[in-house]
Image (cartoon, rainbow, N blue to C red):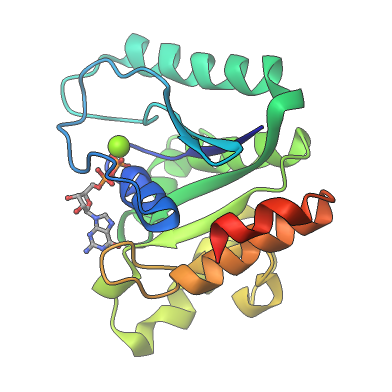
Length: 198
Ligand SMILES: Nc1nc2c(ncn2[C@@H]2O[C@H](COP(=O)(O)OP(=O)(O)O)[C@@H](O)[C@H]2O)c(=O)[nH]1
Ligand SMILES: [Mg+2]
């Protein structure tokens, strides 16, 4: 049984896994090099860290597409083993990336991935990471915008069972993220696994 993490390179996926599990997952490794799917056994579970998708310096367009295809195939063929997904995004970068792709007439990969996870009924949790870098008075507006771009009607506080602002660096929001994880496990009838996320 797996919990899968997806997100762009450098958004903080490894840091989030570290925050959730206390495992000494390697953080801040140079993105761009070919990256395999990483599996971290955690109690009766496995936390699965997908390769970062989207643009990275030094990675060709073709390679980016290949990574995306690999993730989609993985999710489809392992659907039965996957409990739910956590999509990590960088709150500073998200809006700009989405705008840039929309202007060119594309559905941004982050938005596409979120919808794909929903289609697969993987009940994605959006971990809106690096919130420590945003002034408190600017957070609501930013989170509303992120929700809007993901197709979730603002205000963001209507979606507290979907989106959670966190900082994997300071630990802010991590209790709320764990609570959502426990909630997902409860909904799946897996109450005994909730203890791993206290
Ligand atoms: N300020 C800040 N930096 C973070 C946060 N989470 C991760 N980082 C930093 O972002 C970089 C990428 O983190 P990493 O977990 O390796 O991202 P990954 O590529 O998605 O696995 C590292 O330098 C982290 O220290 C956060 O919540 N706040
Ligand atoms: Mg990583």
